[in-house]
Each structure stands twice: as structure tokens, then as C-alpha cells.
Length: 296
Image 1 (cartoon, rainbow, N blue to C red):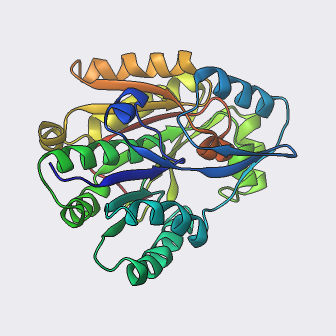
Image 2: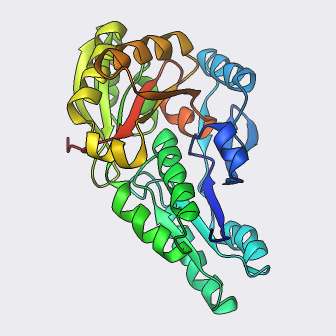
């Protein structure tokens, strides 16, 4: 087995048992909750996430900060100094400039460590999509792929991970500039739940809208069944990440709907990290799986 470090940043979510067993490392990310600046450097516990989303419900505003090239250099140089290569899986370039910062750091690190590879990968994903890609990275490493070969394989796979999700409170998307204020106000008044995706370019796009949570959850399960790829599942497993913003009851309901279409689905239910949750708010539910991406 090849010996190199695998990192993803804290905007990703992954089964913590799998991450610990395979020594997956996290690049910390800053976020603010009200006037308090916090650091997310691990998969947060359900207790921490519940308190976070409760404060959001209470009106505390949340924001996130991008990772700078200097931060990457500080973190990854410690690995490269030990002559150990690094594979880094970044939040989608369609959502943030983080990947571009990683590429700037890579060019500088290559000058100081020309014989030790540092390979940043644009996941074109977020949250559990990054988890799926990281799980694939581990399997590739175990199969003997070099860090460069692994990075290339992940770049080919990145666009085959689907994200379908709904949000409960449209005002979080409005604050992030994703939808106009008038749309958010009207949608909230009519109990409209938008169905959103991460499109082939890694950008957030609205593809549908449903009235009421239960109808939206059924739409997510239908999207899973319509767009899943059995061939990819055969190669990489039938793992499905169901993420939620402090709405485990809805996530469990969604898992039941998914299993109606695929009883063999390997479902991992997880609370959404504060970094992504800052932009989607409490009550969000996502279904993330291997399949065929669509455009908005």
C-alpha cells in the first residue's frame, strides 16, 4: 500500500469511524456564530451540532471564512518535511475560492519540496459528497495507487457524485446571496421547500420546489432512484450519505424512503458540519450518492 496522507477540509462530512480507522486528516476552517469566532477541526459531536443549530434558530447569524494559501502551506509543509506526500480534497471551486488557494499553495510548496507530491483535488462537492470522494481515495490508496494516480482518479470521479437537498428556512440561502429576498419571503409564507443540487460545475442550483417537508423528502428519494448509477455502486459501493441540520427525525424518514427504492443502500446518517450549515440553516436534509449529475 502506498504511504501518503489524505486530507479533506472541514466543509466535508465523513463517517467518523471510517475517518479514524484510515487516519483521514482535517484542514480546519473558521466560522462565526454571532460575535464568536470558532474553529471546526473535526467531525463535531451531535451535542455540539444541536447547540449550534439551536442558536441559529434563536437568531444568531453565522458566517464562514476561506482557507488562505498561507494556512495550507503551514499545515502541509509539516507532512512534506517528513518526505510524505499529501492528497487533499477541497470544497467545490464552484462554491468557494478555497481550491484556488490550495493550488497557489501547491505551487509554492513545489519549489520548497520538489520531490514530494502535494496534490489538491477539486471535489466539485460538499459535505457528504466530499466524504464519498475521501472514502474512494482510501480504497485507491489501499489498491496501490500513487498520490498522483489517486488524484487523477478522484478528479474523474468527482462529477459522478450527486447532491440533492432541501432547506427548511429560505432566509439562510437569501443571506448567502443564493436566492432573492422576495423569493425567500414568498417561499417561506407559502411553506415552499426548494430542491437544490450541486451541478456538474460544482455550483449550487435550484431544480424544483415542493410545498411541505414530507413532499420534499419524497422528491429527494425519487431523485436518488432516478439518478443513481448501479455500475458505479458496484465499483465503489452503495454508500448514501443522508445529511441533516439538526433534523435527525427527517433524516431517518428520508432513509426509509431511500430504502423503498434500494433496500441494499448503505446509508450513513450524519449531522451537517457548522461550515456548510452556516449557509443552509437548521432543518436541511440532503441525499448524496454515486450517480449522474444534472444541470439546473
